[in-house]
Image (cartoon, rainbow, N blue to C red; front, side, top):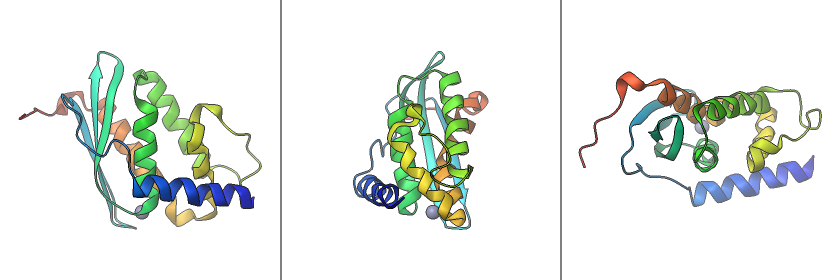
Length: 152
Ligand code: ZN
């Protein structure tokens, strides 16, 4: 338990300090925004889809350490995944942060380091912080009619 908590702190603080993929990818053709009024987190998720595959993923916005770390790790995990795989990861992550107490669920190798977010279960008010960017990602996957026009 304390190991999980320690890892949770370490990984989340690291990703909050040095977020990966905090940018709009070149050629991004999907985007969606998310806002968590409970905490004030705002995030925009960008995807560059090539057919059915997420070629690149990034995010912009401002939020707490949990939302930033979640966005950082999610965008890393998404690259190279198909739409179906991204949807499946959404479900797995959602189960992870809303599931039974830590220790009662076997680790999910598909989520890799995101497993540390199981620590969020101990802080129900923070679940939305962790899942915000995932909801935005899923909207972006479906936002074919709202594909952004690159001005670059
Ligand atoms: Zn938050």
